[in-house]
Image 1 (spheres, rainbow, N blue to C red):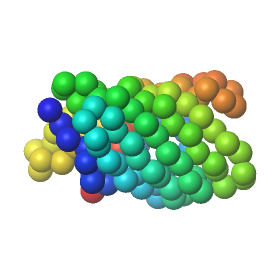
Image 2 (cartoon, helix red, strand yellow; image 1 turned 30 degrees about the horizontal axis):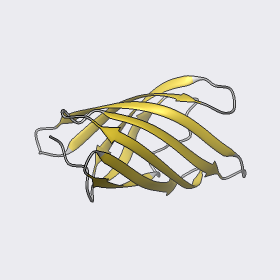
Image 3 (tube, helix red, strand yellow; image 1 turned 45 degrees about the horizontal axis):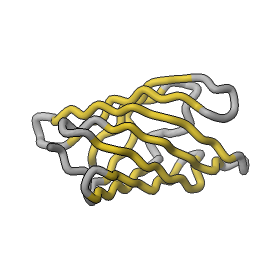
Image 4 (tube, helix red, strand yellow; image 1 turned 180 degrees about the vertical axis):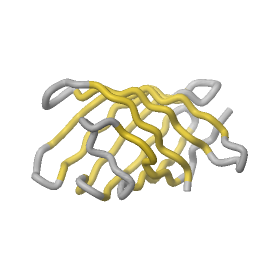
Length: 112
């Protein structure tokens, strides 16, 4: 099972309707099957996520953040892990806003 505790991630790719960028950093914690993270950077002032992780490391998450224009944004995300050759984790994410325009997108974040 993949353990996300004390891992730090940064975005490497996101669709245009997303707000996460290469300047956004995620600080993950894990307690049993519950994963949480705080994130900020780029157009995101502050944000948090909570997820349930399954036995192969897939994350079923909900997130919320305040962006740099003062808007509270919320969404859902499914993340599938890939362990890279260097042993670090890459997450392939499919997400959808539950606020704003309710659009969806895909992103990739990598452990740094």
